[in-house]
Image 1 (tube, rainbow, N blue to C red):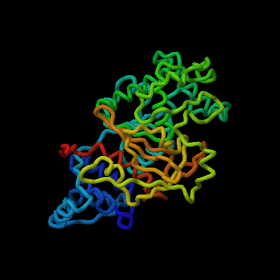
Image 2 (spheres, rainbow, N blue to C red):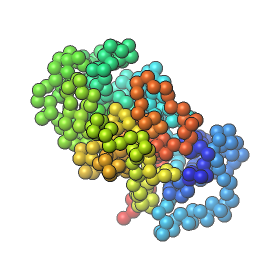
Image 3 (cartoon, one colour):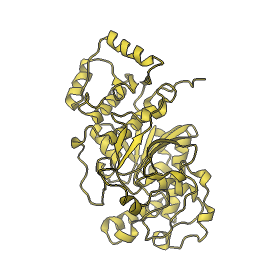
Image 4 (spheres, helix red, strand yellow):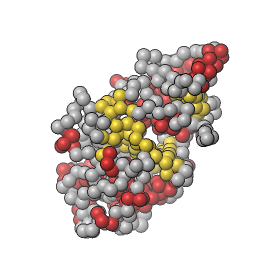
Length: 397
């Protein structure tokens, strides 16, 4: 899985998932040649790699044992983690969305990793208990429809989105979409607390935390829910309910695209960053002592191309002090990739919309991952997909 040795990094994750689905174990060799996978040998597996265009090397037992011995040396920042079971994957997404509507469904489809789509009815019907891993993408859990009203309120797709969500909310017994989304957010919180793995991108991370903080507080203007927001909404926020962020300021102005101050200022950022100089760096963690962030940061480069979205990056001053920062742009003061624990579960937030589409606009054509089989940004997503398969190690004392 290093830069030179692998023809298709993304489909290699699909091969690994496929092997796990056959009730066979895999070893993830952390920090060894870009985070390689040690698979059991067999003609069926070799043939599947060839069909999918995934590069592989055949090792003798002695060669494999020698690699494992080298990795185990205290002098090496490497480790072997056993992957035991293919996680059951759910994606929170409206019915009818195409795979290219968000980066995760796009790369899952490309890597041939199966997933199930769930939305409000399934979440509130306690169907999340069937899954190990849940993804949230460009969803607005505050009930403000992504703050698209000012620019797209007359667009057919916007009107359809509003009608669709209002229909679901009323069907489920809620008078407002914001109330329905809050109930969904709380169910997702309980899923995580019970041991689930939550992964979020784009507008989902900040809108999710804002929704939790605003429980019982009306932050939506009349065009979103039929009445004005609470004039004292800001003072009533409860940041202790948030996963990742604190002390942020919400925006109740319907003409302002941002939901809160968590996201960086887009106009200010455009004066400082462009596709040529926009990058963020992954942190290096101890493979033996910090295997979780090490797994989540496996890549064939430590420098990742930046990409924009409804939430392009997190302002560092609003990230809670107990949150683990895994990727940031220090020169811009931006945090891009963060991780934490909640109850018995874990969550990861990645800012931006599409790692290979720098500035995605409504109506843009989908990214063709056949042109980006070695994308470092999409590898971060797939690290999170395989992460729940890891055998939990006893804590070192």
